[in-house]
Image 1 (cartoon, rainbow, N blue to C red):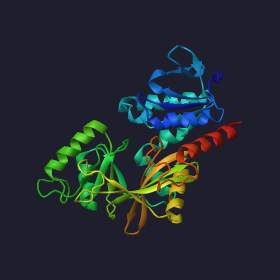
Image 2: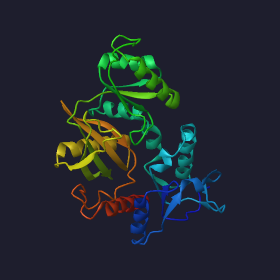
Image 3: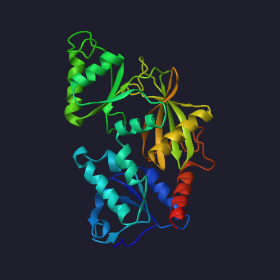
Image 4: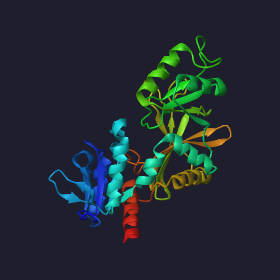
Length: 318
């Protein structure tokens, strides 16, 4: 039995969600749609019928649900599988998720994501999973310069760049003692790490926002750190305008399509052999600081472009 449709669109956040989600709800409301910003923590998954219960006990399923980034990034790792199941119950009840539950379940994991992109012929860094310090050390010994990060991660939390240790490594050319200690604690916290060969670059990341098969924003994150590290907490990056390159935009659109996402933000690096897709983040939740600037590629602003996409998805269901 399908759930009762209580709204056209849920914009699902968590706790103090980004103001942009409310902006999106207001834009949809101005188009005559019933749109509501919903706190994920106020919902209880329902199995029979599939859907969700609100805090007052009412059973509801929206026609479409936008899944904001905090739904995942504020989720303890131990409950990740249950979160995916709860999103699947919304789909089972008749909601169209943005992004779809199957794509989120498969490709929020950076290891599977990279494998899927590589299988489709897209340029990605050499990447391996590591479950021990020795496995990370072996990657360092082979590649010389690596980036280690959680397979589920965000905001550069627990991202390390590592090179061979000067002394004390158990693997010749591998990690030194201190690096090994840092990696052990990351493994203790995350269980599995994603290890990628470092891509030599000009000290900047290329960021793109994709909404429904269109590039909505494109700009550089430029490092201000002496060593060019774009993740250094003491040296915040600055933004710079990126010239429009059709090959870059085509690469970004292909990556998003391969993973089955409706919306995404991408990190690319300009490597010695051309652009490389580092990761594709399956959400677009914070864009106010980019909207209607020189970095915005939309005709009328990212909020309106996002709302246009959601209206398209609703029309497809109709």
